[in-house]
Image (cartoon, rainbow, N blue to C red; front, side, top):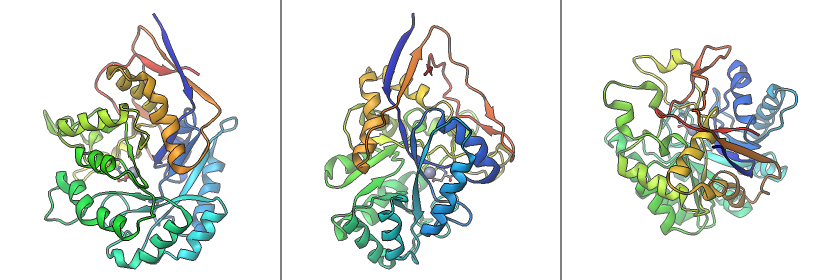
Length: 347
Ligand code: NCD
Ligand code: ZN
């Protein structure tokens, strides 16, 4: 028995494509299924100015295989030196669709992030004025805050004050991992949305730590306890338009993942849509998948829904996904959900 589901072609509202050989290898994994993606700027050095974003967009388009279509939606990395005039020009030309806030030291390549929020106030005011969203990595970095509490503490200490000080600012809480994040979005209807990753709908912290350490499940923000995963599932499958897909697919070579101090990131571009169909069907919410993956994000960003379509098919035999993607930098392991998946993209 086969079953099919056709939806508007999805977009990924939080994606790491990297650069060079890695970009070349991972870009087709996303472009195969997604029409557009918000491209994270945490390169080394980061994408901070409009000119950096132009050059990076051109490298992405040059890496796109013949016959594939994909639109990178560029972002700038917010630093304490970001110039509001540069942001305004890059937004006015259509080049950038958001700025990205990393608290300094929060995650991979975030050393140039913000320490003193007073120093970015003029940029935030300008963004509120022109309607440019701020994508937020919502974790405090204080070493005295338990890593599992960093998102909840960020909401109270940083996010809520920023939003109150700049009321018109559109904010995306990225890759939320807690019920606290879900509840904050639900109770603040003005100018606030959140992305949820595929892997945080599937794993909790036991998957990382119970029965041996599993580096391929380690990402930031780190997966939390099961009650939080359930809250994320409920939010994603609820049909509430403020929640949308941002995979945070974050490729690192296996050599860099399997170190005594390994990199954070799950690589999910390859099988995300199949896994989401599984998750949404499990929660009797297949009819909500199109909203989550294809409609809610464009609505938040004020962009049209894609006219192209994507078809998923459920068959009797489990889908076979590659275990790894080969890249010029070495193999990258594809996220393994740990259960058989009968859905796959077929058109
Ligand atoms: C991301 C990366 O590798 O760039 N890692 C991750 O665990 N998600 C950075 C990020 O989005 O936090
Ligand atoms: Zn990310």
